[in-house]
Amino acid sequence: MCPPTYFDVVYEINPWMDLGVPVDASRALAQWEHLRATYEAHGHRVDVIDPVPGLPDMVYAANGGVVVGGRALAARFTYPERRPEGAAYERWLAAAGAGITSLGQATEQNEGEGDLLLAGDVMLAGTGFRTSRAAHAEVAALFGLEVVTLELVDPRYYHLDTALAVLDGGTSPATIAYLREAFSPASQAELAERYPDAVLATPEDAAVLGLNVVSDGRHVFLTDRATGLHDRLRERGFEPVGVDLSELLKGGGSVKCCTLELRPATVPSTTTTTAVLDEEARA
Ligand code: ARG
Image (cartoon, rainbow, N blue to C red):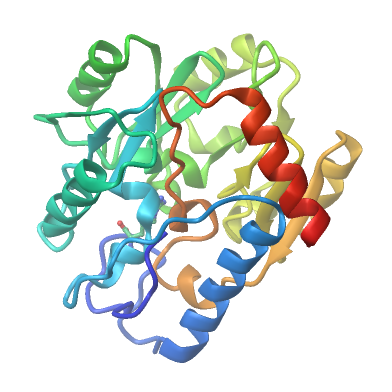
């Protein structure tokens, strides 16, 4: 995660950003701190990258890259305003430790986990607004994963993580939620065929960025505003954990945008389980 120390809306590169709506910087920081504390209270470790002055969108760490099995790929951003973030995240990933064993060199335009969502053993990959199809091929080659290209058609849902949520990558197929209307007809058909049991989100869920979630397979961290989605998640056996990120919404992001998931090379599963249980006992 990256603290929103320099967060502001000073340019408009998605329909959520409005130069006429002021950002409350201290409120943004308090909301972000609360999200971080919520992860920690649920047994998750949070690493923090230093924010860089002049890069107001750096708080959206999910866009910094993607890490699978200890292999990392840093972002190459679409808009010049965000391009320097790529180098900052690349430096962090190279130095992080955190189970990261190699760093690939991106040559194509990709916005990290904004558009690249690991769903079990396939990578769901968004395109249409930011990440290019050429990047999807690059990701397939680097990670040795099947990449499923999904075309986004609604500018409000410009990143895949605003239109689709991976709830559980451990089931086969993965359990996902998505907004049908955000995808091209061909991609809607692909999703329906691969994920017949998906949770179908409503336009109301999506309009508060309710699909922008982080899930550990049990707890689903998401905006407290997506109350309909909370209900549907509960029906499916998940525990929604609602947080207020109203200030970060002004930049067009929510929970997932603020979170880059680190998937280390090999973690002995017993160690992870113990750590999680210890944390839960303390919480
Ligand atoms: N203002 C940022 C942009 O438009 C928001 C990024 C949100 N991040 C995400 N993972 N969807 O690029």
